[in-house]
Image 1: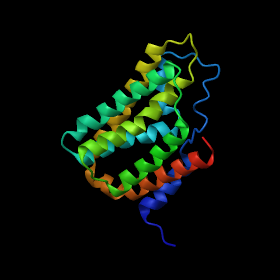
Image 2 (image 1 turned 45 degrees about the horizontal axis):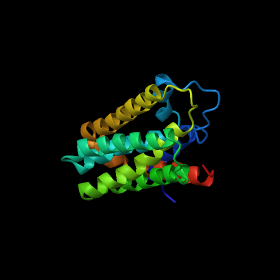
Image 3 (image 1 turned 90 degrees about the horizontal axis):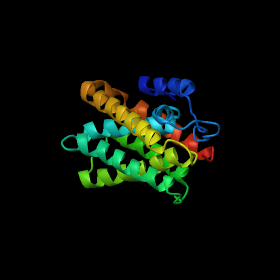
Image 4 (image 1 turned 180 degrees about the horizontal axis):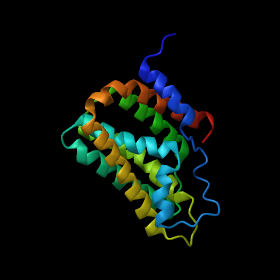
Length: 195
């Protein structure tokens, strides 16, 4: 079986990519702005999805460049409010793993759909990410600071995805297969690990 350059590079990245499937333990952590800001960078699941939303927004073009990141941030904040209020969300970690897999397909296939459907799918991804970010913190934590931290970090990751899509469209077209492979492998790893 002969691999393309992008597929070989993607496989190499998988060996060095930190797959922090236990990034959501929350044990012995002071939950404040700093911890909130670091949380999206602590696991491949969050990092990949938030980056992919930026990439997808550029490939959809038009209003998507603003709408998709804003929908993600808004619904993510709503998911965090659900967790802060103690409301249950069924198997949020499974939804996160599925969002990684779906983002792999979106990036790989450069999926073009109507803005309303793209926004709805983005919101579906964001709800579980926001919920998991907030579900593990203690009652005495700085909830506002923590939430502000992970929302700002998420916006940064969206921005990196947007910049990548806008400044390197040729490179991105070349790398889509490799990125799709990375996303698929991470998503499957999270599902198999039972997140």
